[in-house]
Image 1 (cartoon, rainbow, N blue to C red):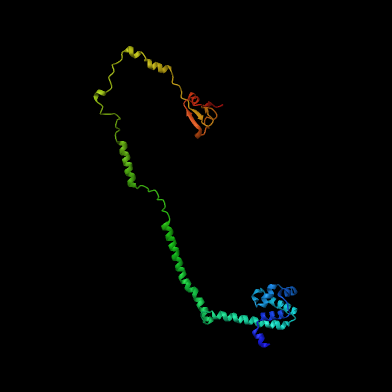
Image 2: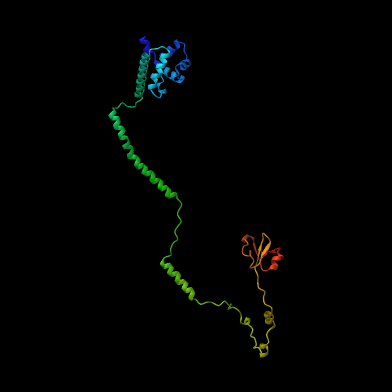
Length: 260
């Protein structure tokens, strides 16, 4: 029996006891009010499925009571299985460890690593920042040049040229190349009788005064024209405004007089 206990795991022991009584996991779950998931976890030594280790003892008590097993013996087997799993886990972790240095040496090395990394990280970070700033300055568009203020020498030269241009004599706008024969004809002095008689053209111009020019504003949208002083004379939109010299011209163009 002792050799059988050594070879047999805790989960195999539970499965063997349950199968010897012809009880399925569903029947056991219904009788003990345990879920099938927890029963299978106990029978497969999957103790990590339980969020609280203390609840395993209560599940084992219900399991042992329904199968008429000694709870103390079941609990002892569970504790041995848990110790075996823990030792196996520690052995696996040690087998994959790269070195077997003492804890003091490992702690010292772990303390030195941040210092070594910090020695190179800060300069590298500064170099990266400098490169980014240089690229930004190099690739950024050139700023608009400020307007240059003329110097005092240029200002004085400009003023001097302006004064010289003003002092230069004004040339008459006459064609000096005109031949002497093209001069204006001399007029004989008028006799007293001729000077007293007004010309017909002057009298005619004085008799018929020139007609005042009126600007008529037309609206191309409504085909109406407005005279000065009317209400909408100045309110016609620019893109609809048409100007006429007289009412007759507006009427000929097909426009009608707008209401007062």
